Image (tube, rainbow, N blue to C red; front, side, top):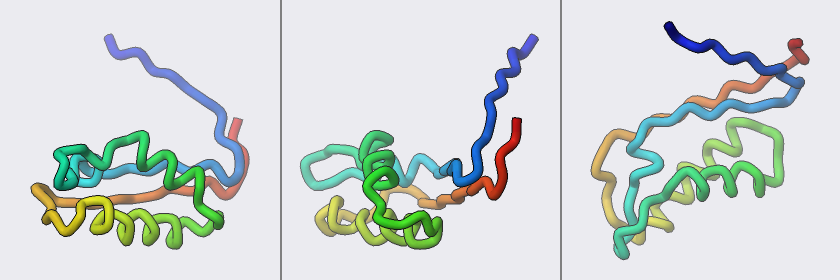
Length: 86
C-alpha cells in the first residue's frame, strides 16, 4: 500500500522537476552540479520570474562544468502556483 502525503500550496510556491543530467553534470574536478547547488541558485535568484530562474540555471551549468560536456540529457520544468490551495 502506498502512503500519500499532502501539503498546502501557497501562491508563488515553485516546484522544479529535472532530469538527473542536470544534477549529475560534473565539473573537471568530478564534483556534481547537485541538488544543493540547484536549491542555492533558486533561493539566490533576484527575481520571481520562473523563466529567468530556469535560464539562470541553464546558463550557469557550463561555467560550473568548466567546459566539460554533459554525460546525459538535461531537462527542467518549473511549476509555479498562482493561488493558495489548502
